[in-house]
Length: 101
Image (cartoon, rainbow, N blue to C red):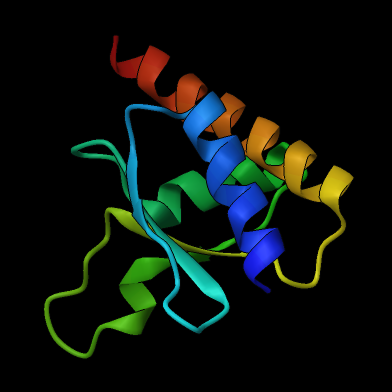
């Protein structure tokens, strides 16, 4: 788990350096904070079109969901899949941000 989450964090630093995330402390999921105003549910719809799935963070809160977060899980993925996933995530985020431009 630690090696794959480390690779995920490394790829995020390279492709999405302006975003922040919480790495798991003994768990499997990395929580990524999206740019202000970007909703995880909306981003998922765009990511799906780019061949990527993740879990929007809003569903994990009982009250006042944090809609600007997503939960990423890389522990069951191979290295090349993690790299490709971050590329697709970065492309999707960039597409959304370009629309707001």
